[in-house]
Length: 143
Image (spheres, rainbow, N blue to C red):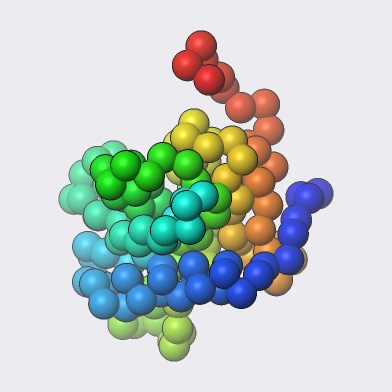
């Protein structure tokens, strides 16, 4: 069972940033996930995932948002969220929050073990620490 926390107004603003970036940039078969990360400085960086014809080189939205923050010199992360945009053939009207994939869980925890993740848990939007989603994390001497 996850140890979760309730969302704050700032968390809903973060979700909105992820929704806005994917709503603006959605392209079927290219971009359907938007992500936003809030750094400890309070700055929000948002990005879309980059789909590739060869799946292994696809880059997730969370990785893009983290890379964008780091590229701007902001290295300490507070909270991150990803949302999926509905495809044209789906009967869904709006974006929804998705949990990070396994590789993103590793990446997020590598760059901030104190980072919170927003996700749907028991049909409710909550946040939890990234390590709640990655028990027995692999570590290295860089930690």
